[in-house]
Length: 237
Image (cartoon, rainbow, N blue to C red; front, side):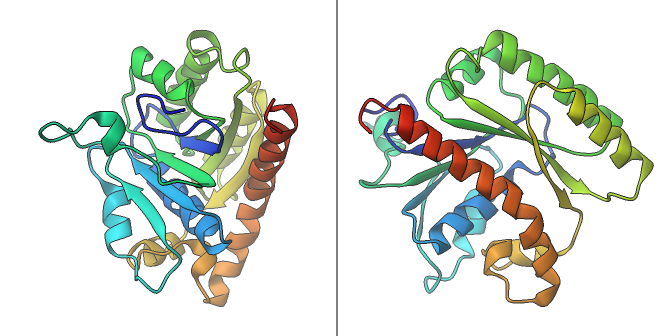
């Protein structure tokens, strides 16, 4: 079964979503995609951001790296091509990672939510981002009704320096949410170096990236626990 976004409904579908721009959605989406591809999952990366950052990242990726199927979902279909056909997922895909645009309105939010299993919300340690995250979480719970739909939602503190006062404020805020606070990803140039090569943090051999891989582990574990739970409750399981 395929919806408007061309997503087959019996696979693990993860959207990185926050209406606030500049919070690191593409960094998380591309690193997730590279992790799953490197772990031998058939992986698709859907780029809904008009800036096309995920698509550019894929264009830098060496053909010698594990393959990631890229979909430029932000582009308008040409000629007689339908949006469903343009955004189609290749057969036997295991993981679909969706890099969502900023500024998603309520109707777009509902359409995205209806077709995913998991929502990841990256939040930066700044007062503006904390305020925006508060509003967005309210929309997820009240407008999109994610709990009623059985969709899991988790929050990731992104580009954080844990020894700062603003991070401590962010941490306190995230713990007040009625959502899992999964992990903290630190502010490091390792993500920039990886992005410049079209790879993810888990594909870096530099020992300086080892601590970042450790920070990712709670998120990867949480996502796979989610997948196992979905499989148990699926009528097809």
